[in-house]
Image 1 (cartoon, rainbow over the protein chains, first blue to last red):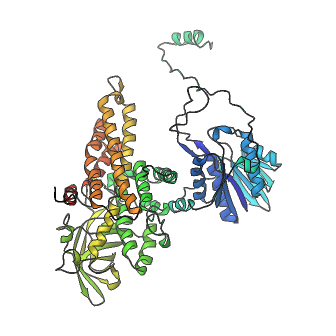
Image 2: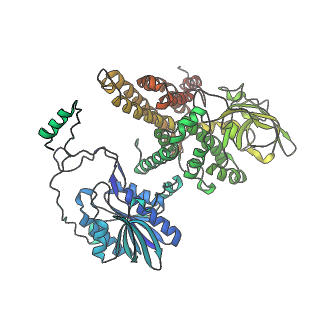
Image 3: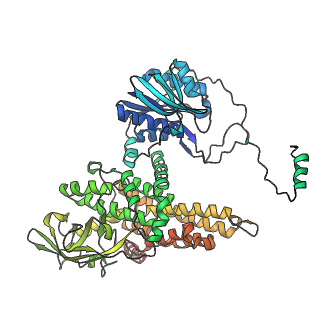
Length: 249
Length: 384
């Protein structure tokens, strides 16, 4: 079984994000990065499927050389090899990302394409769906369980009010939710061995992808500062403030 | 020359921080207060690959170079792993396992290293004796040839992992006449008749590492337990210093980062005179002093590790400077870190007093600061 799996770099979800003074983007100086938690779930699922059914898991990502650190993590977790497509983060939108991944799918011809359901920084939640649509493949998004049997992936998905179980024919596109599994911490010998695993670098041009964007970012701005609360002494004062200041009554 | 970490090393640091914070650190305070070795953490360190990191891949280890071990040790300290556990790890991996990897024959390596790599067996190293500390060559533990082996008689002192070790690398006198050349190294297994460990000694710091004397009373070991050549023991012992002055010091650099983090957080939250104490210059200077110590210590320790990885012979002067600096120059800033926290700092809950206590071993273990200064001045030549 051959599995393609994403390993996207995201800004540290615990870090404080600052918008550049001119509003053209996020201040990246001193920012720490991590592997997208949803991608970690996808990688864990890919690696454990390969452990069970044989085959290979290939980690893919798009970005400049510094995202290779995250690909190495995927390799340390057990992926056999990795592919990086060279293009800067700020020159991407969901559509271009999907079109690049489609090309990788067509080159590698995997049985399954696993993605994190969304990146925890951009939170777009579009790429898996776009990829499936462009490839005209079945999709199963927000997977909380995946079982491979008889050429199908039986996927449980958390939906409003319950759990839906669907079966999709392989090859298929599946996006991982947090409850899919607990990603392993790669052991140190595996981290060291990951340095020696093959990592291929491709360019959009080599893949024949047009890098024109469909989404233009107009401006970034920080959410308005919240004001602190106040304590009132009497009920009358409360009613008065609700009426005149909050205009809630 | 390159002083920063490579992307691979930074990634490794991230991984270890995450592992240690998740799997080890939550139990640190409990074990420190009870002066207990944490067998759960030990098992996890083994499974994660820390204990075998420097052991060759052929014997089940990670085959890592010294700089990699330094990065890992530093990250363990930074995460908040206590000095006791990192010392137990250092004694096991660098003083015991590495000595066997460097000087053992094929049978010895195949027998001991895979079990040390996983942590299934705990290792220790015995050089110091009640009457031979700084003057290590004065050791008196006697090894006499008997039919088919050796008979050991004598006592080792302050042996890290002594009470729990499954195997011990022991330096003993095989020739009473020759001083340095009369010392040989041996491996002694737990349970060998005549070999026993004393009770755990209660210490100022590094309390989760167990320390005891080792007693040899007509202890007979077979011929094949000789490690390296007869009479070469002192040189075997000297080689462990390269690890002692690099990877074993690395957790102290990391733990300083842990203190900085604690101090910044406390100083930002604690308010006196109507403002955070971080706004007072006296408080800010204490944190700056920690940073200054950390950066200087890091440069010294990295250099020792880098030289060993380049295959250069150890520069004893530089090694002594690094060892002394970590031990002595850490005293004031780590004390200040406790003072910055006021009464809370003196209590266990804030962990800073534990770090302060743990770091005090750096000026004593593996050679006191006094002996380091003696070495430094001697190596500076006639003019001193």
